[in-house]
Every structure is written in C-alpha cells, then in structure tokens.
Image (cartoon, rainbow, N blue to C red; front, top):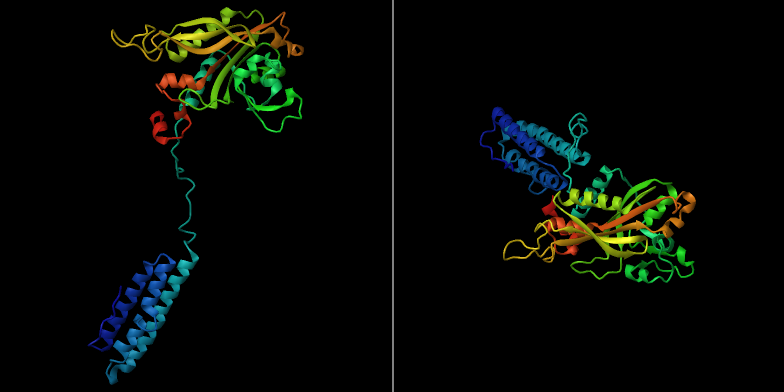
Length: 371
C-alpha cells in the first residue's frame, strides 16, 4: 500500500512530482480492487478521517509547508482530494456494477466446453451386448411397465390363481389392492415375461422380440441374490417354429456372447408358460469345459463340472396363446419359443465378479474398473 512521504522541498516542481506519484498510486490500488471487502480496505486507506491518506496530506504537506508555499500547496491539495475522491467513486461503481457486458461477451463460433462422459455400468453394457446380438438376428426390442397387474404377470402366462408356481416368484405386491379383483391387483413385475403378452396383444404373428428390463423379487440380499435385478427375454412366434429353431438360436447367441468355442446343452425343466421347457448350460469358457485349470487345480467358476447353467427356455405353452387367440394366435396353426436370462449373472461371469451386490453399492472405485 502507498505510504505518504514527508516533503522537504515545497517548490512547484517538487509538489507536482509528489502529487503525480500519489494519484498514480491511488489508480494502481484502485485497479487491484475486485470485490466489496477489498474496496472497503481501499476506501478507508485513502479517505478515513483519522489516518487516511487525504487526512495525512493535510498534516504532512499543508500544515508543514512554509508560509510562503502554503498557497501553492493548498491549491494542489484541493485538486488532489478531488482526484482521489473520483478514483474511489469509480472503483465503487465498478464493483457495484459487476463485470462489463464487453467482458461477458461469448463468441458463439468457438467450440463448446466438452464435458467428460461416464462409462456404461457393467450391467447396462452386458444388457446392450445381449440385445445387439438378437437385433442382428432380426429381433426388435420391446419394453413394458415395471408395475404390473396380476393378470399380465401371472394369469395370462399360465399361472392361474393359487397355482403353486406363483410361490417361487417371491412377489412384491403394492399395498392397498385388497378391494380389487385379483387379476387387477398391482405388483412389481417378477420377470419381463408380461411384455410377451403385451406384445402379442398389439402385434399379430409373426413376432420376434427381445425384452430387456428390470425386475423385482422379495429376495434377501447376499452375494448371489438381489431384490432388484435385470433380465433379457426373447419371444419368437410364427408357423412351423420348432424346438430345433430354439436350440439353434440360443447356441448362436451364446457363441456370440462367450466365444465360438462355447458349446450348449439342454436338459428338461419346468416353466408354467412353456411346454416342453429346458434349462440351458454352456461349456465353461474359463477351463474349456474340462472342469480343470491345470493338472492340479480345478475350475471354481463351473464348480469343477465343466458346465455353467445360464438360462431357461421352452416352446410357448398353447394355453398362453389362448389369451391372445383373437389377435391371430391360434395354437393349432402357430407355434413359438421363449427364453429368458439374468443379465446380472452373465455380467458376473464375464467380468469375474463374485458378489452381485457390488453392482448396486455405487462404489466409484469398483465402477471405474469398467471405464
């Protein structure tokens, strides 16, 4: 900060030099002021009544001047006060007004600020990979609501009321539905299969759709279970579709997903909406289907069997077509197959993850590995 000097020479030339130096110092300090707090310090330094620079000018210059020089000194001091007051007022106006319009101009021809994008979550990445495989085979993508009615989630898929297979779904029901007919009661869908019925209601055969989505079940969270998870289902309906078409489709999809060396095998299972039904296993892509990593170490991924259970499938039960028969789905003339797989489980296999909860904890350290 500027410190006022004492004058030993009161000649007009010496006075003019001292005044010029003082005004230059005031202008320099004014240009450095950028906010209200700095302005208050600046103003008090120059204009405070007790020890401001202008007060000191009276004491050190005017009162100390010899009698014959007081007229010259007084004229310069008055001009000096006016100049400093104008400098302080200009600084106050600048701070109050904020940045000038000129300083805020934007050159719209310059490239915009490119904000960095995050990476796909491993579940979303796996889901998109599965969907793209079936799109390349000619399947379209269908989606539906996560809050479903009992009719679409169960009844129309050959789960009649009180059917024991309903118990395996661990359904989460919406509260306050007791006064509605059972088929109209709301729940969180337990699988993406309701979209199969919704699609057939809207579209006459032939149909080939793949259905990705989030589903909910009342499962206790642990390393292999989550109350929220993701599925991809598929439905193909046309004339003369056979189980061989289903096997060929899934065999091709698994080879696309896990590598051309992967083999598939089917063995009997049960699902209310398909008949016959099958579970699908793939040969272990880590140990090559041998169950061993080397002569002394077994493969824990396939539990030493050489095979990994991956999805369920089957031929659409004629009873299911009965719910949409009026839209061209006569079970006597058409047939179809359906399949469904858990996206989370496939992501765990592909990326070597042993705890499904890691997908949902939101730990950035975990997710950054997939960026």
